[in-house]
Length: 208
Image 1 (cartoon, rainbow, N blue to C red):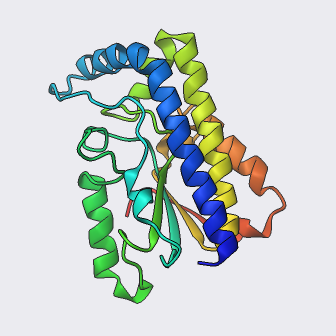
Image 2: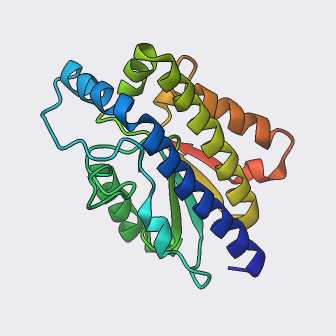
């Protein structure tokens, strides 16, 4: 990547890591009980709740020599992603499917773990994405945080895509529809891309 691209990415990464640490420190004590209640409500088997707000440590492996060809946006960190030993995005079943997709389509020339910046619409963990609605309904400060993180992630996604000039793949569209939990994220992205030629590089998929 160019020096400018590297600087933009590095600034994003540092701010993202710092924000996740701040949000985790400020909200973990509120979020953890709610995340556990959401799990019980959806009859999700018990699992170790370790990280309420998940920074993607895979970003730390990107260097100035990395060849970034694509930005992929998932929903939010799930059970595997929030484990303290992992803290990486798309490493569960969805991530395995994504890796398989690119292996089966070598003509794309993309290694999912080397050539892709992987982000989410929010770094706040739930076992199932729809559980974010449950969290929002239980606590106003949590609701405000969920919206705040979506707006910040949408802005940063836009700036990164423009900087790298690559395609942006949004995977999972059910919750960006009207009344979905990610409407704030979608509307912010639409606002940023309005009258922007980079919009032609944005694609939305149900799944890989």
